[in-house]
Image (cartoon, rainbow, N blue to C red; front, side, top):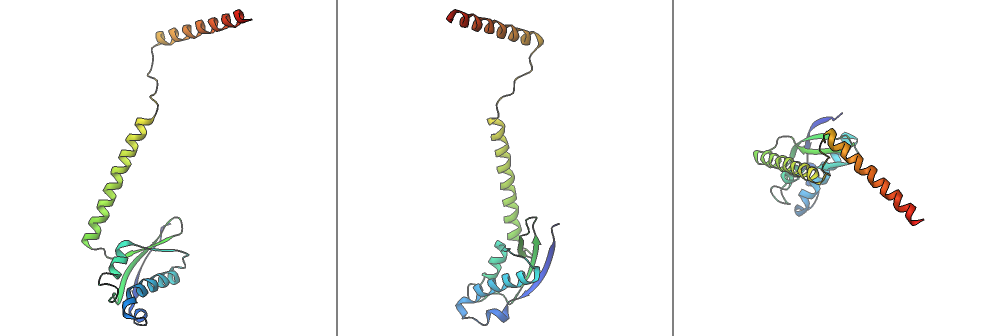
Length: 149
């Protein structure tokens, strides 16, 4: 089952402890540590838009707290995303989904082209003619073998 949780992660207390130029990096590592602790996961993947939200104002000024939606995959990997996506993020995700659909359609078309053309249904007369040709070919091969001996 795909489990889903929402956390409001406080970041300020941790990034205040490091030099100013290293604050966003510390905020992202603290976010990962927080999620590992609260989900008991072995691996956490931070989403693109969540990372952008942390680094939005540069390396020196990350947000004090951030709302995160965490979901578990079938593989046991937890993915962290922004709980409330911006309109830009929704649009980008939609564009990616549309591109993926187009790629799948193209792959299906290519697979169909690469498949060997199936034999068209033949009438009974055509089948009988083919069988006769095969029999004649067998006879000639047998005859050739006898002649060689």
